Each structure stands twice: as structure tokens, then as C-alpha cells.
Image (cartoon, rainbow, N blue to C red; front, side):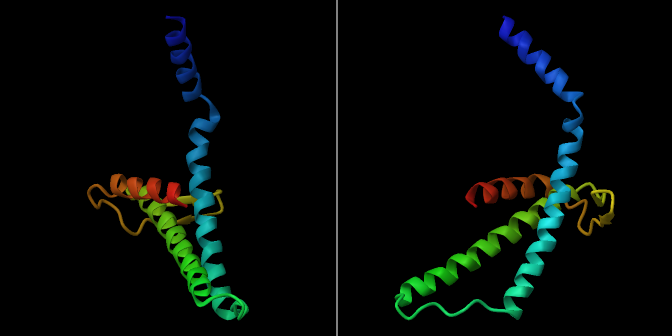
Length: 127
């Protein structure tokens, strides 16, 4: 019985903890910064491509390396886009560290937050 009292107390205290309300906003802000960083990274990769793989590597190794990089970029973009869809499902913009706001472009799309939440969770675990 003491364990359930302890759990109830911890849940109640954590609800009033400052991080309980600040952490989601921090998570959203970091996500937007990561999205901007990823866009810059992809642009930089096109401007300054990596050196060619050594000829000593097999064709399978070279193709696999390129496929792995492309897959990782796709997964990262999908995670960030699904996070954006979760955050803007209610039509409110995302406030990024109090510096600027990212507007909600898609909102009121039915179960947008639920679907994007499942996608966000599974993609994050896959990475």
C-alpha cells in the first residue's frame, strides 16, 4: 500500500514540476533547430560532395554506403516532419526558444496528431 501512495505522490509532484511543462516546448524547439540543420547539411552535401569511395572497396560496399546514407536522411526528415505535424495539429504555431514562431500549415486534419505520433515514435526507435 505504501508503494501506491509513493507513486501517487510522485505523479502529483511531477505534474507541478517546471520541467513537466517546459520539456515539450524544449523538445519542439530542438526539433525545429535539427530540421534547419538537416536542411543546411543536405544543401552542403550537394555543394561539396564527399570524396569518392576507394577503388579497393567492392561495388556492393559502395552502393550499400550510399543507400545507408540516403535511408538515414529520409528517416531523419520523416521523424522531424512527423514531429512538426504532431505539434501543429491543434493549429498553434511552434515557438522556438521565444525567438521566432514556425506557423502551423496543416491543422485540423482529423487524427493527424495520433497518426504522426505513432510514426514519430517508431521512426525514432528505428534510428
